[in-house]
Image 1 (cartoon, one colour):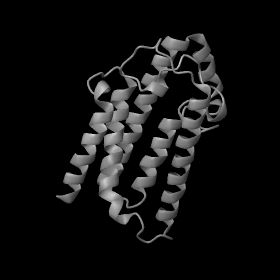
Image 2 (cartoon, helix red, strand yellow):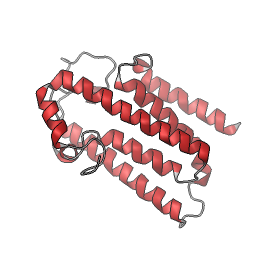
Image 3 (cartoon, helix red, strand yellow):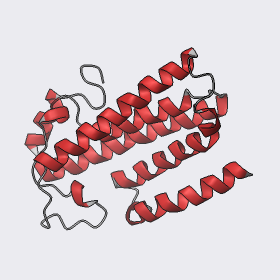
Image 4 (cartoon, helix red, strand yellow):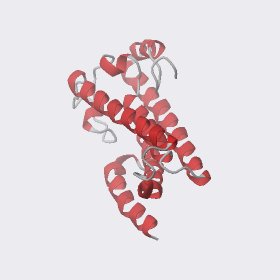
Length: 182
């Protein structure tokens, strides 16, 4: 019961953050919201195991994935703040302020991967999953992965509309989530 109460309370916070995209199935924000919910379920299911058996193989894998996740989000946000130019010209109320850039950010971490923030969420998903593995949670982690993939696809469609051929060229030069791999 405790897990459901915690999930409900924290889901309200995610709904408040994401309310603008909840019913826009053609927006990357909708799929990101659904992935956040999966990640939240993983968290409320595994938070009790966070520091259990700290030197077990799965815990070490988990911590490595979580550290990568933190690095990716910090590098991505710092690069976007430095290089991105948020503007009121992009009057899309489904976007967060930092997403309303009219400059294609292709420096720093973005010169290797197009979606470091979504990549961070992928590593977060699997880092939390490996805290305490279970078949049902594997389904949730896979669901989050699929939703983040859809998030990236819809985001790329939106970016092609904004940046056109320049973004298509950028897509050819970078990987989606993991440098030199995917």
